[in-house]
Image 1 (cartoon, rainbow, N blue to C red):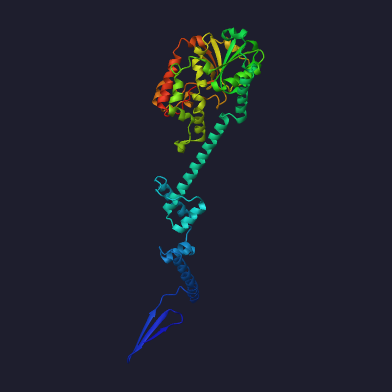
Image 2 (image 1 turned 90 degrees about the horizontal axis):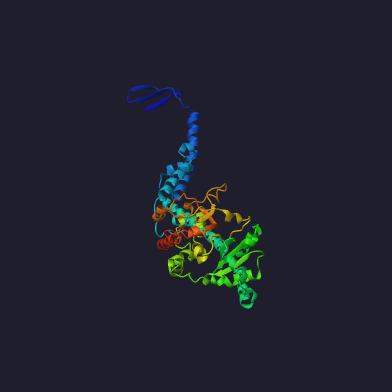
Amino acid sequence: MQLHISPSMRSITISSNNGFTDLMKIKVAARHISYRTLFHTILIVAFLLPFVFILTALVTLEGANKCSSFDCFGRRFGPRFLGRVDDSGKLVRDFYKIFNQVITEEIPDGLKLPDSFSQLVAELKNNQYDAKTFAFSLRAMMEKLEREIRESKVSELMNRHFAASSIPKGIHCFSLRLTDEYSSNAYARRQLPSPELLPVLSNNSYHHFVLSTDNILAASVVVTSVVRSSLEPEKVVFHVITDKKTYAGMHSWFALNPVASIIVEVKGIHQFDWLTRENVPVLEAIESHHDFRNYYHGNHIAGANLSNTTPQSFASKLQARSPKYISLLNHLRIYLPELFPDLDKVVFLDDDVVIQRDLSPLWEIDLQGKVNGAIETCKGEDEWVMSKYFKNYFNFSHPLIAKHLDPDECAWAYGMNIFDLRAWRKTNIRETYHFWLKEVTYHLPSLSTISII
């Protein structure tokens, strides 16, 4: 048999010779591929095949044989016509899916957290974490970092709070020196005021100010500011009340440094015979109730839920939990009618108040049968200072508070209050105060945002 292809590639002749000749002609359709094109195609394939083999071997050696060689080659190394595409978008979507899954699940117990990102990468390489384990580790690291940052901010606030509220060493030594002066200097122990001025202490034609504090310098600043601002300083009478440990130093200061034109009386709490546990329940709460003392003096971070605590809210709670709120000096204002039985009207000042204007018009104000006159702190242009309502000070999630108080009731500045003692004596304010004091003591710490003022 013989096969003969015509030069034009248009026909093929097949012949056989078995004693006779058969001739067959087959017409072929017109060609569409030239020899040159076929040659070039074969040449390109021959050129690429070694690279395909080498790259496929590399993928296999790298451990990527979970997919077919051609598929891995196409995804990682091959040109676009072999199936290679940009997988970054798909990778991001896969990670988002995994992160969205682990954020709602509990972090596995015993998950070892690396201390740094480089350590996380090293463990990821050595232990060959799957994507979910990596996501859990990353989430746990971020939550730990957020917690440490929050605790650091809270600790900073506590340090600033204690630095601002504690007594510096120099001032403490100053008080000790004055106490020593009281014991060694007779002039420091002289009677305040002098005997001939004692009747003035109960004379209602004078302007009586009450200052309850254990801070000697603060008391001096308040008294001096009132005198300098007053148009009639000769009518000013100051009743300074302090605790037993500060009494000697406080008395020495005003005895050795008399303020011109005014009358100053210094008395200690221990000099009031009626301040007993029976008459003042706060004494029993302070002395005997462990939780009450620990609430104000204890560690404010231990046991606190810092996950939902912002530095601002924690600062507010620190202010509300200041130990001064369980100081008897802070509670004395509720006993003003008993402290000054002969007076009709007094102005009570905090030791952080500086007076810059004459206060004599206060004695001309008619409180119209009300006990307390003060500056409201919910009306004014200053949004920070003049936006205080009961809801800023009380925990209205507690049913006891929600039942008796209105969260939108306007608060007032208690740094300077004028009291009509005649109207006060006709009320049961002290008994109501004692009731709330017992409630606070019983429900502590669920009434944690309450500060007794």
